[in-house]
Image 1 (tube, rainbow, N blue to C red):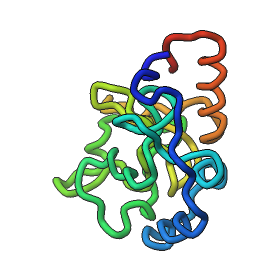
Image 2 (image 1 turned 120 degrees about the vertical axis):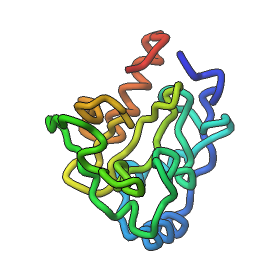
Image 3 (image 1 turned 90 degrees about the vertical axis):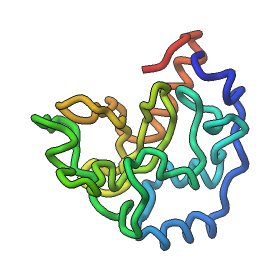
Length: 170
């Protein structure tokens, strides 16, 4: 499977509930329950350069959440709703939602997995698409959401692809 040599199908130790609660309090968000449960019971990040067992080059640890941002995170970056949602087509993403030099088009999201070539899978944590997985697309129509209902569905689809012997995940 593409990226497996980076994470070797290993995950880092889970975070404690207190660590995740502190993160949520600091950023003014509640993480989607399935993702929160994953990082507190199964694993958080891992040994690879980009993280642990997961799609592409592996799952980023929670503390690398801002990797998908274009700029530096502000105190309210995660709590600010992500402007994209499934089915919404933009005429000129991201200038439509972030017209100023300091505007952040990927507010309300955290980095999940590095796809390579500067592209990332990201998890929406604030906004109408909360809990959905998308990417940091630079196409004018905007980010492409996966068909998965949530983080766990996305992760399980990757596991199914691995077990089926697929070499790439999409």
